[in-house]
Amino acid sequence: MADRPASLVTRLGERAGRAATAAVALVVLSQVVGFSWIPVLWAVQSFTPYVLAPSIAVGVLAARHRRWPIAGVHGASVVCLIWLAAPVMWPDAPPAVGADAPRLTIAQGNVFYSNPSPGEALDALFATGADVVAITEYSEAAAALAAGDGAAARYPYLAANADLTRAGVALFSRYPIEQIELGPIGRSQGVVAVLDVAGRSVRLAVVHPQPGTSGRGLSTWSDDLATIADRFVPDDTTFDASVLVGDFNATRWHPAFRDLLDRGWTDAHEQIGQGWSASWPNDRVWPPMVRIDHALVDRGAVALAARNLTLAGSDHAGFVVELGLVSRTG
Image (cartoon, rainbow, N blue to C red; front, side, top):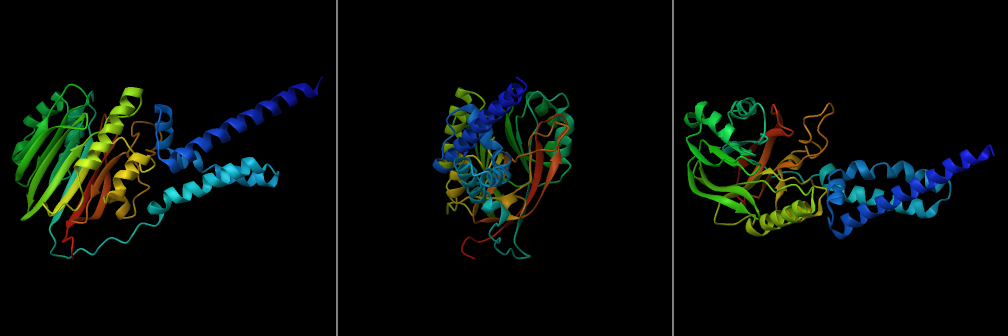
């Protein structure tokens, strides 16, 4: 009789281990094949390195105990993790940027549409002195505060659509805005502007795909990412440089986001060796775990520096990125 509780614990432990191994196998399969079918899988994919990293120890232990099927699954998980993380761990060397190349600094932040203190978050963004400030979840309260804060004097060019929901978006610029498009990018609101930066034509899009936390949300997110990939072609010779910036609600570990990068976009943080930096969640007692806020550049711009910003009342960390504008053929 005394052995029964121990035997029960052993059986339960084995079942839990098999379930965990099956879950790891599903995550690996989803990454290799490239799908995010349901919200829970989409959420787990956001944290893929944290999910797959334990496979290193589990695989070794399983092999030592000759549990070969389990060892095989976790061995494949480690290989998948290395494959996914390789561009972050060993990024390509960025192109050289001449001392006389024009610079463009961009501050980006999701200020949270129901932020109880939007003014503090806006102050943090404007205090950077960036050439461009891109804001997602730009609420009507934030817009009123920005108008009363004298932002127009510092940023005479503005393209904005404030909203009571998370759909609000704004682009403040020191540089002239030659063209403006305000409206849906996919099913979510965005801003597309063409800036004159020291004689260079820079297309800058502020995007905010909705999170895939529900069936409907995942459908919207997928459509938004696909639209961004199809609509914004990197190295479009109509412009000297193109930049996509915003809260993508996506990490490198989402197949759809990697598909976007594979079109020819470069993540600015990865380009300067900050691919492991994180922006979300930023309202917990622990540090942010993943980066879902990005600046993507084509070959007309090269990342030179980046740093995170604390945005009071938001669950996101903002960031400032400095870009050098270069010739794509140089």
